[in-house]
Length: 359
Image 1 (cartoon, rainbow, N blue to C red):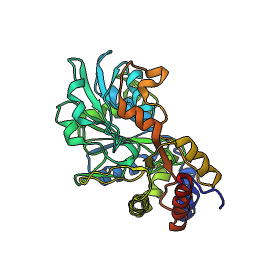
Image 2 (cartoon, rainbow, N blue to C red; image 1 turned 90 degrees about the vertical axis):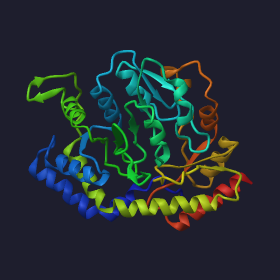
Image 3 (spheres, rainbow, N blue to C red; image 1 turned 30 degrees about the horizontal axis):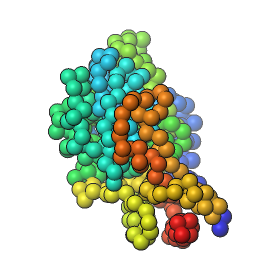
């Protein structure tokens, strides 16, 4: 068979072409490329969707995490508890903010941070917890919030997911998401957003994203150039029209993948009963990954590894720790093609190729 797309953005654009093109043309016509009217329009739509008082669009998911940390006025050397099994941006922002990441191992079946291990990592310097809602499933936020510390949910992969009936990004002190093109809700470049119910934190974040300005040329705090482009906001607004349908498709496709994998020698991702998963990636764990990945590639099935090395083993963020669950997952995870437009026939082809690769 011809090679499948790992993420099918072309089909998504074809379905939304009229709306996306009209939205882009509107921005070109009014010419307000920075902080144009679509920025606030998108923020209001996302506030309503998540169910929070404030949404602040920013330049990327990475910028969202950094601005959240900066808004909380921590001191250099303060400790932030987080997971080692995530994209580097999670810990990168902690270090850029002058803070110290403290790693806690993951649950072996969900790959999210293991909340039962957090208490042992808390010290007098601990100031916040930054869980990652990995692969599209929210971490155990109630257990994490029980420690009474500020919580910043890295929800770059989980926008649209829910936990105990509430939306990801609206569960903690800050929710931070990404609109990178491959995310469940993506733009056509970089973009991201912050969510909070705290008025003071929201105002701080709005100032930080425009170089710390409380008014034009009045710089009241340290800031960054962290605005989301008007064009990218326009694109996300168009994509919101189909987002509920896309989530339904992701739920259906993810459930069908889980069912089709039931008799294969692989470890499926555990999805907890009190939450759902938007399957930002459809990830499973298996042995002999390199050999299986090679056979899948030869069969025209693209794969990816999220992530091949935990952050406590990365040179820039290394710590002399043993975190066996994260280390084992890094050796075994593999992600299969996943998007809302993945057809049943394509999914069958993926499973058939995987079955042959495992034989």
